[in-house]
Amino acid sequence: MNTQEKKSVQGENGREYTTGMLLKRFIPYYRPYVGTLVKDLGCAALTTVCELVLPMIMRQITNTGMNHLELLTVRMILGLTLLYFILKVVECLASYYMADTGHVMGAYIETDMRRDAYAHLQMLSDRYYNNTKVGQIMGRITNDLFDVTEFAHHCPEEFFIAGIKALGSFLILSMINVPLTVIIFLIIPVMLLCCIRLNRWQRKAFRMQRYQIGELNARIEDSLLGQKVVKAFANEEIEKEKFERDNQEFLGIKKKTYRYMGIFQTSTRMFDGFMYLAVVLAGGLFLVYGYVQPADLVAYVMYVSTLIATIRRIVEFAEQFQRGMTGIERFLQIMDADVEIFSHDGALEMKNPKGNISFHDVAFEYQDDHNRVFSHLNLDVRSGEKVALVGPSGSGKTTLCNLIPRFYDITAGSLTIDGVEVQDYTLESLRKNIGIVQQDVYLFSGTIFDNIVYGRPGSSREAVIEAAKKAGAHEFIMNLKNGYDTYVGERGVKLSGGQKQRISIARVFLKDPAIIILDEATSALDNESEFEVAQALSELAVGRTTLTVAHRLSTIRDSDRIFVLTENGIEEEGNHEELLAQHGIYCKFYQMAERLR
Image 1 (spheres, helix red, strand yellow):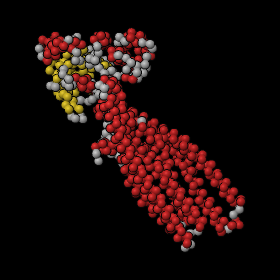
Image 2 (cartoon, helix red, strand yellow):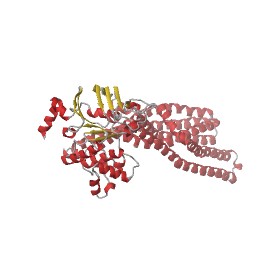
Image 3 (cartoon, one colour):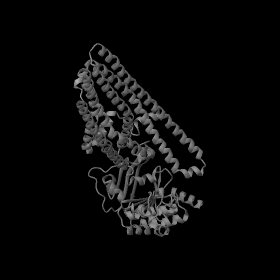
Image 4 (tube, one colour):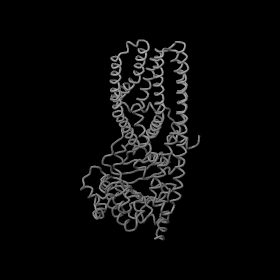
């Protein structure tokens, strides 16, 4: 098995699932809908009555006509016809209930599973998203779960109907002729063993197909989101070639899937033929030697036809079954992804924080590759203090800031806020008291008002406008055609970098946290925008503990303290003038920046 096949079988979490494991995890989703399921299966049982009764009616008419023709009256025929008509009406009503309410039940289950998957995704750490393509995640909670609707509805029905028909046919056929029934039913176990083996091949092919759909989605998403870069470098042909490779790979997997389906369906048709051959040969011989009556053989052939039609229906359902099982499997690969960052039992609510932050002998490494970012790090930030972090790229400045709101957990040491370990606070209360302004601003698709009020959902329009004024955003917002109701586009593409940054600052103003983290908040802006945003950030920092990560040293000259962070940890500490006087790393950075101006 190649690398891609292994990924498609096991998924990102490295777990393998048997059919039994998948069903065990899936069945509890029926619990809220047990009443509907019971009614659905009851209707499924009613739909089988006609098929089981019709051969008996034909047997009765044939036997009576051949042996006691005088008893075959119009009244008898009309009575049997009326009985079949009534059963057919019941079957139609039952079929309607199954098609309507049964499908709705499947849609409810799909909705419940999607809700659980989305809720679990919200709890997963950055590490999961760093290692999982968004296209794969989207495929799992949309396309994969579409098939679960059909599976949830049809799977109990199909197997329940098949069981009733198989058992009913066996009992009735046994009453007609036991030896012939035994011959017919000896073929079925061999057929089932063959089908099980072929089903495994199909399941593997469907896994690969779903995995490649996710890869295709990820390729499309990556290319479309980066379409400006593609055009800027005139690399449209390269992107087409990449897409074509993935597209052709998907085609190859689908061809393999259809090949397995063809083998599967051909095998079942072959066994159908064996069963008919057994009826023709053994039934004919039994008729010659008087072991079976002609009318009984007619009924026998009709029951065997019903049985074979049932088997064919199960075979046709096998593709849907495998799609459903694959969808459940990929759903569970989300649900079984480990939640690494969570609120511990008995965690404290952070109330009225002062904002004292302390790193004591802290070490951190990324679990994926065990890349150690820093060790034995010591850093204290006092309440209301403005602190800046500078240093070469890769020294861990952003990582250090990400540890405070627990985007990652420290590997060793102690990280406290107001003397309490950050792990001892509830995640919600910890993060509600920390405001973050990043270089790469993310605005949701919606209006400006929607994006600002996200900082504190439920806030009044007046509060949103006040926050925008503090962030220096109100004036440009009012100059837009629709003001606060202006649609910003996906990721805020309709706004400039400075405008997006000021909206993100307004969002933090509305949140009103005790601790502010500014991660390269102005480094991507032009001089004019930087000046405007810097003013807003200065206003935001008043009365709050503020940590600023910056490459532009001009933006942090007014910081109370500046820490120089390198791969060896904190190497220098002091305000701007003190660090220049030391003629160390900070001084070299500053002199280089001055030469570049």
